[in-house]
Image (cartoon, rainbow, N blue to C red):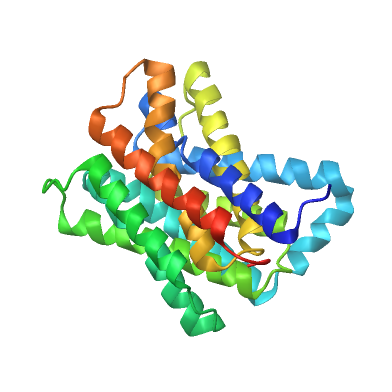
Length: 284
């Protein structure tokens, strides 16, 4: 039985949340500074996406870059800016603050979707957003070890994510692979003056390649393809799965068992997302 457009969107955005949730795992293994990580992440991400584009469509796939138009360039620029804000925020404020601020994405997405697209969020969506925000807050605690600059960067990242959802929803015909490739390349070029150009050790190079291919290429490609099929608030809610999934990978790889607060808060986030996904009516 074929998936509905909404069902496919849910599946794709869920896949992007899984891919993006590996960021913490990769950064645990990597020894490079934030700018160098971003440069290699974007470079390998762009190479991976370009390879898929050429393998799937041959040289004819390059025509997609000419069809990006203003919406495609805008999406790529916002996406690149959001990733720069995210990685930099992690170096300037606590992970707890970044996670809680990002949990506000459903509210920003709902507001932008209403203002710019006329898609008014329903009561279930807002209830699920409140639950997800509460669950994320329980997971990380309401610590006070952040900084104003880092928190503002995290807010900028969250706003960028919400805007990406609205752009993809408004212009669903944006060529997915060219837009994601351009976004990865932009994020790499933006930090080039601050990054180390020395070739990393072989083991680190493999990890950086995995970071770019999984976290950047796969995450960007799936997100753009899926969020064009869903209301922004629903894309943001599914993206909140990043919070409970990130400690799961660390637990599986490093055997660091999550604490009671992480388990309880993660369960609340997942329950909110699953409840809203299963109860949302119709194609939207």
